[in-house]
Image (tube, rainbow, N blue to C red; front, side):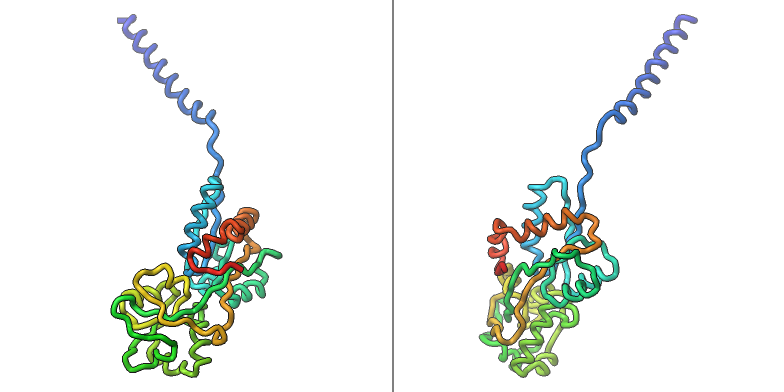
Length: 264
């Protein structure tokens, strides 16, 4: 009996020794390097091209994870001003970037004009109205015109400039339905919920459900320039600068052009 007890005790000691050794082995292993999480705020019209750029950058930089927040430039500007975590901002207009610069929120020397775009009038590809010029939206057969909300959505601001220049803004406002960003405007036209809408040429280019009815004459609105800048309070300043340089590089010029942007 005593021999049996001795054997059992020896087994218990062996088991306990084994359990104790497991945590020691874990402590000895070195954890992998922690990834940098870069927060990028980008205009909704950049959604498709930005996703491709991010995929390319993360492939080259496995230690960096990029989190994108897409929306209207005005909403993104306000989020940044209210303390939202952002390392880098890509705006669809100068107005929003100017406001951040005035507030001293941009990292010195990082702002740059990156892209140029166009404003176009779109109709549903199937069964859309036979429109060939912006003034035709005032016709009796047009009940709903999809536009970006002009206070915070740059494409809405450019749209109002165009219609003001053409002298038909009041008539357009009577039919307008306002989207929270350019992709919502595009969606309404794609679904036929509006007979026409005003979006960027790049948004029309990525949709197979709309067709471009007309391009806005260049003299009817301000040049559509997309600026980008690193934020002064960026948590990952160097990574943000590197990604901006990557996006603006000659190597990625063709990526932007593929989506219809003109690189500055």
